[in-house]
Length: 59
Image (cartoon, rainbow, N blue to C red):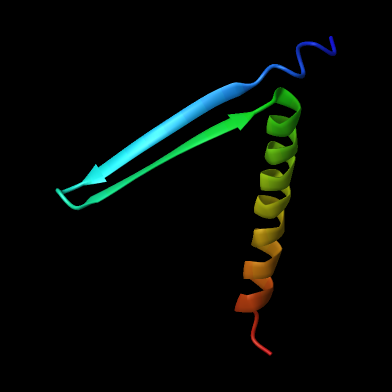
């Protein structure tokens, strides 16, 4: 089980807009890192709704 959590997954993206603008990036993440990223994104998404609701309330 420990060996499966250490294998890396890779992804790369290359973007080009017109003749002068180009960008690219590459990401390598382990499954444990992917779980950590997912937990952080979930926490951010869950915290946004109460902030928006409290900002809309009149004083």
